[in-house]
Image 1 (cartoon, rainbow, N blue to C red):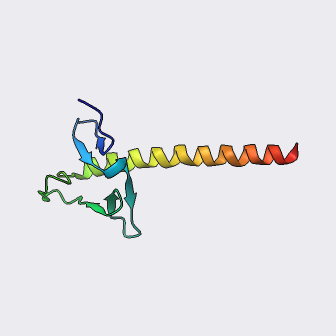
Image 2: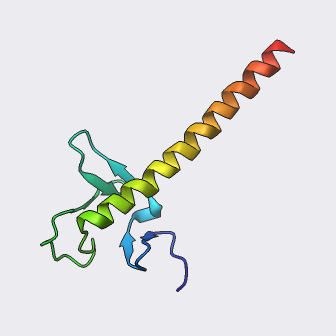
Length: 89
């Protein structure tokens, strides 16, 4: 299957639409894609644009997103350390 930058592919092969591959989370723990789309975690939700997100799929999306944030944090920390080293030289 062709890679789509606007979807997140789950282990099952199911693709969840996420504009630009962006997934976010609100203070109320609602998950969103892109800048204004909501991903509903209710298993009875039947809107094909958002996909029928099960609780297991929501967990997988959370794990994917956490990995991205950890990778980003490592990148930021590396930049901070490199900046400190340059200042010491």
